[in-house]
Structure formats: C-alpha cells, structure tokens
Image (cartoon, rainbow, N blue to C red; front, side):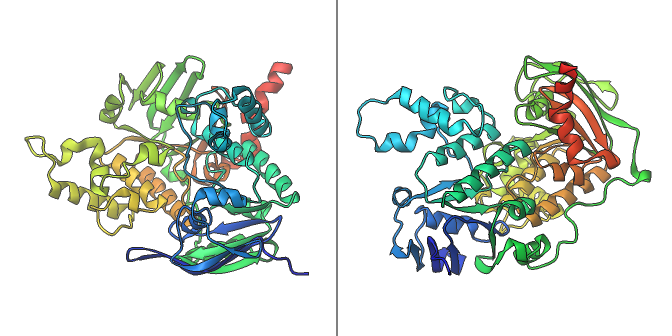
Length: 506
C-alpha cells in the first residue's frame, strides 16, 4: 500500500530579483524514511529547506504536512508543526553555555520568570550523551567548529520533531563522530521520524539513506531508491555531465623532490600538542589526519602564530625563521586557510576584489597608501581566472557566491602574496562534488609549481585520494605516517585511535 507523505512540496517556485532559485519544484518525504537531497551549490537545496522551515516564503506552489495544506510563516510555526532544522552554518550563541544553547527553544517558550539551570543541565547532558563528552557548562565560543556542530545536532534532538532536516551535518565531524550520528538517525527513523539529509558525500547517502532526490539549477531532476541507482548516476544528474575523476594524478616518480621546503621540529603548545616534527617537501601535498580534539588545526594555526604560545623550531628552505605574529608568517610566504570559511576565510560583505587583496593591500595601493581600484580589479580578475572563479562581477560581495566559489576567493587571497607553503584546513568543507574536483585540481597544480601544500581534512577518502603522504595525529602527538599502498582508511584509523592505547596496556 502506498504511504501518504508526511511532507509534500507541490510546484514551489522562488525568485530573488532576476535570479530564479527554484522552478516549480516537487518533493515528498515519507514517514520514517531518511531521504537524501543532492545537488551542487546553487541547485536550490538550501532555498527549499528555508521554505520548509519558514525562513523564506514561496512565490508559488503549496506545502502539505500530514496531508493538509499549510502555510509555514516562520521557523516558530515550523517548530510547532514538528519540523527541526540543523543548518550547515553554525547558528549558536557563542557567549552562553552549551546547555543554554541546547535548551534555548524550550527556554524561549517557557512562562517561568527564572531559568531552571539544574533542569537545563540535565536535559543537555541527556541530549549530548550519545554524541559527545562536551561539558554542558562550557561556553560555545571555546569549542572547536566540530564540537559546535555536535551541539547543533544535540539541540535539534531535544525538539519533539516529526521531520528533521540535516544540512551537511558531518562536514566538520570525524568518521567516528559521523558513525555515531548515523546510528542515531536510523533509530529516529525506526521510531517513525522522517529525516531530510543533505550531503555532498556519496558514501554517506548510499550507506544511510532510503531514497535520494537530485536538484540542478533550481529544478527537481529525479527521485530514486538508493538501491536502484549508483553514485555515478547521482553525480551525473547533479552536474549534468560526467566527472571523470574527483582527484588528480599524484606525484609521478620523476616529479618527487628531496628538497625540504618546511621543517618543523619539536613544536609544542601547552596541553594541546607536543613534540611535533615533520618535513614538507617542495611540490608535495602532505595530509594530516586525526580525531576531533587531536590538535590538527591547532598545529597549523600554531605554526602560523594565529593562536597559542608555541615553542619549537621552524625552518624555511633550510634556514631558521622567527614567526611571532601571522603577519610575520605571511611575509615569509607561509599562509593558512581556516576551516571556518564564513568566519575567517572570506569577508562576506566585502567585494570579491577586496577579499582577494586583503592579505597584501599594499600591492594594490598607491604611494599614498590608497587602494587603486584598477590594480585591485586587475589582480582579482587574474587570480580569479586562474582558479576558474565563477562570478557576475569582481565587485559583487562574496556573500553572493556559492560555497565552492567562496573557497576559490579564499585561495586567491592566499595566492596574492606568492606563498611558498599553504596550510589548508578542511579545504572542501561544505562544497559540492564539482567544486571539490576543481579545488583538488587547483591544489595539485600549485604543488606542481613548487608550492608546499599541507592539507587537514576529516574526510579520509580526500586525504587518501589527494595527498602524497599522510601524517596521523593522536592526542596531540604524531603517531605515524602512511604512504603508497599503506594509505588506507583502516591504517589511518588504527594510528589515530588504537596504536597508542595498545602500547599503554602492553
């Protein structure tokens, strides 16, 4: 017997000025199913989810919930219907505790004049129990991006949802944390809760979802059972073309260099990482893997002196260098791309051209220190073209770009200083499969030009497919290195989570 959808979208359209974000879109969600939505950035996925959650209103079309036509005028109305939304971008209050963030919805609707902190703490602990050991008393601003994402998920789980929307929920999670989330998703589905799962990761869709719907250029393309379609079919439907490979060829034997461009010796910073030593060779892509909290981002940020009191030796091209501030790092040709693209990677309200010039404004300024608009524009056009940046005009704000193109702007900003070494933290987080392939190609092209590339990623397939070598970090120390045929997910996870435990019990 055919099931009645709990949620049905009927011929919904939405425009933003001359831009048609959705064109007569249809979609239905069945009770107790995990339904994936796939599509490139700009395909209309987020616009549709914002309409379902009441953040946006459709220009045309109807929404049915449990068989009845509804108008979802606001997120509060969506929540009353039983719709919960975990956004890709973190939307927590940084200056209050984890517990207060998790219970904020219930607190806002409470008629009590005083907050019951004991009750809030108890409820927060219950929500976090299956996800993480994060303290409910911790301030959100002190958490890493990955920990904040877990708090967002815990917050949604406290709501009495009938429909739960998860937008790229694993983008900042390690494999272990993602597997915990997948188990929770399946238990929720078994209880009859319906889940809309948005992801660019084909392996997650095919291992955890029942159906997948594909969107392209604001239009609905197809819905299929995952058992009846292949990842290649989904990707082809998403992009309207076949992507031959997600990863470019690695270094050939004749391309490998023994020349060490960056040497790190005994890098230490309080309790976060200890005695970290490694070499980065000219023209190679070196990866860094590890579980959440292992210290991956902290090491890169410490080398560039973006945070922490770091000791140890840094040598560039064989010579010791003294880096006291990030400006010193930039001047030496060592740059860092943050995992928090919208927080630290690009200035959303500034133009594309101004973003690209931000690290070295003096290069596009006159002798009087005033920015020369023509020079700034020429630089942006040149670097943007080299990266395949897609935009209407280099004077438009960065906020108008897709995630993949925002990331290209961030990379162009680093290239503006002619870097020798680039640290990239989660370089393809939250970008679609087509943009991922382009970014991977860009990084390999830079490596072939002699730049040393250091990639931190929570996606093991990305590290394995992109990098020439992978270092593995465990609890602030490098536990090993994998290369060649030994570069497998099993070996990386072994080094990240098991090896030292066995040594301690031996």
